[in-house]
Image (tube, rainbow, N blue to C red):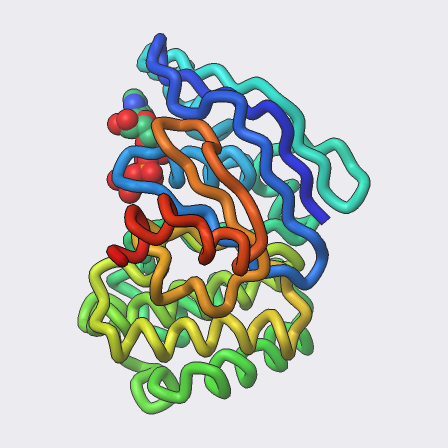
Length: 248
Ligand code: ATP
């Protein structure tokens, strides 16, 4: 479904991604694990094309020079030159780190904004689906985003990404800062999204343990480079991964 090869991202002279190659097959859940600053968000920005928007903005304001190299193929197409909006139209949708919902808008408005490119029947069906997997959102659909709990905001952020009708959903640290109970709810929902909607998912996390049971394949990112990859079982049985990412 998606093959990225030799991705290099420089922020000025600082190398944030160093020759990263990752793959996600259709219907897979792929995990990307790494400590703070390992390059997880940069990778997600690069796959979604947001890095190009940031690059342009910086260029226009005379700010940082950002260089992006490598290749990304998605469903047989070379998408490296596509802007984020073009990639989104092709089905690559990013749910960014720290939830970034519209805090002045209601839950329903946030969801409708997510679905602005979808047809009205697609939007209606997906809205019903979002309330099915996140039933906690329905009774608070008129509440303003900024007044939601962290867990509710994350559900809303994922819901809003779903409204854009993704084929490949990129989830950047969706469990960050949430309680184990809320994390479990989200992990179950993420698996349901893949199982019921057939959406492929790439998910980044700092700590592997909560999300690990649902991934098919994983990559370990250190200092901007992939140092290890393998199936869930291969990674689980690797002693270095166990001590660094599971604390066992
Ligand atoms: P975190 O878990 O803290 O979000 P991460 O794994 O997502 O970390 P990135 O945010 O991709 O890591 O950052 C990778 C490296 O690039 C870090 O050293 C970071 O400081 C640096 N970096 C990120 N964005 C920029 C930027 N706009 N300008 C300069 N350096 C940046």
